Length: 373
Image (cartoon, rainbow, N blue to C red; front, top):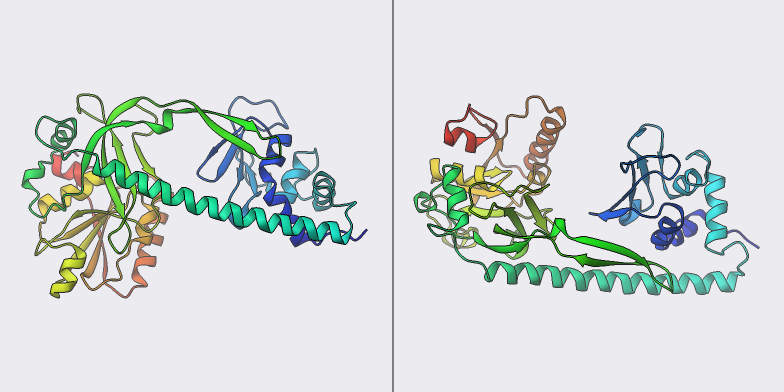
């Protein structure tokens, strides 16, 4: 029988990646397109093996105890998990052909399998599109069901403790809401194999309910696509004492929090209809953005939710003149400094002046506002 082409075999293997992981490296967790698990090739208590599960790189892996040498694509993954070196392509190929049942298939049977794979791919894409529509819709419903931060609320108390009085933010865009929310990162799930192949991830216990500030993450046209959550202590005296008090759902790339409108106090769409423009400040977080808005009401302010997302901010619009990038003082973090430099290079391609705005004191501009050194 003719062996399947490498490209075909890789695509078929990626289509069955969940089954491969369930067989060779069970018991891991999925998060943001990465499957992490304790390396089954040795005894360990903390997961070190990461396998990418989405896109063209699905099946690529890295062992973070030895990231320079123990890594590879899906062929290297199955070779490694079968006791060979990740560079043993032939071992990986042979195992995949056997696991997928391709070695004994006739050309007609392989063609039928390819058609079935294409059908599953279309169904998967349709399912992903449906989940995205549901997620975006759910984010919008969560935001509209929230309450505006008012004196006495946990959200107001938290912001006041950070030196921010919303009543004094003259061009505040009005997007903040707060309410009780499930800390969804604290939920527990079980992964169950399905009879026909694949797995099902089922929630068995929800996360705790905590007060949270949630802010829309909007696309270039202003449409709400996701929410940025800041989970709080019940009395609002600080962030919640959880692993990650700030979360984003469903995603953030290319989206921004519209924090302040700047000169004229008009949204980007209103400003462009009126022929107005002003300088724009990009910050990582909400608190930094509100701090800038308090100090400089003539500046439009957007929060990017993360340092890496600054590079994707939708600045190519007429209401934006120069762009000021609020820089945290990460002097001891060369990775953060490199990420910031790459973001500035990406923004500069739009042809607008790019200026770095470092925090004069403290780690960030909110520290400067509060007098922290």
